[in-house]
Image (tube, rainbow, N blue to C red):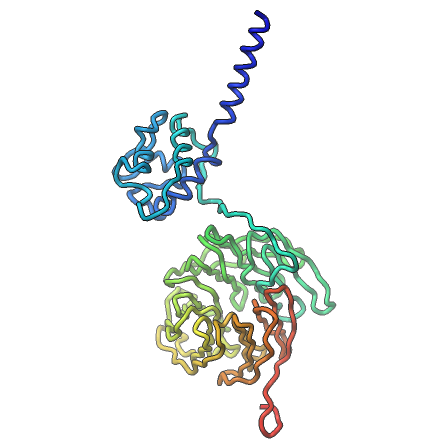
Length: 441
């Protein structure tokens, strides 16, 4: 009798362990299915049929034509299962889209049959980006951005998830800042050189500008609110404002001192790749995948002009130091220069030049510290020097060993720093072609 009792206890214990191991967890087992096959049309933004699956509470709330799509303990009677199986209309996902595999469908049935228990903490299933893990590569990580302080005594160089601050006077590393959420697409020092801002984020999830103290390397504050990765974050000339923009097409202007939102501009039809402040701080320019540069009056967000002559995505935009011209470049392989005249109200800014410059898309441009020269790099690794405002070719440098990810002028000189995708950097001098008379052109 005693042995039989022990056996029964052991069997009960085993069944208990088996039940626990078979228990489904909402975050681990259910949310990934909803995220992969449902959230594209049923998140808080889309809500087709009034249904959002972004949180458990919203899922159970149901849509416009159906109430709660789940009947706990009754998977066959639940509208969610009926729709996925094609037994109820509308069939979801639509027939021309990937269908829920049998194994995942059975997981949903088991979960509903067990009572459809929700998560302990009900957060958005889109708050985390789930991607496959990819093995790293040997060698230095690519440089993705670079910036000098206005006095030239500090240099910041960025890679994915980190950046370094260098003392250029003593050629020494001051500090390395790590733990950023993703690739750093742009770096900029505040006008007084005490802070540096990094434009970063997680592709497809969120964009954020992170502000750090140069003296300490400590994070001061974040500027968020973007639904996708940031491509640029730039201080106004007086340092009072910060403008941010990225893949979600929205330009946001903030008070740099406390992170207060000043204004959102949501007009571009494509990602915003670059921003530039006029030297006066009164106008902001934005370069976009919609093949335009738009000019904004900062005081109230009024659009002053749309420069739409380009025939491809525009990746870079700059004001010349004297504020008289705007230069932009991108996928159409050309350098565009407009004369800037609409400073007070909306109007037209005439194009002065549109030069065919490279055989492939132009990746980046930079003006020398005095504004006399423009350096351009392209995806075919070519590098060329131009005069400004004429945009005449002065020199074609040898092909670069890798694409130049970032070009920055070195303050107080006629030199540029190149930061490349193979993790190398190099300072180059302005070089001009020899004319036929033997003097420099």
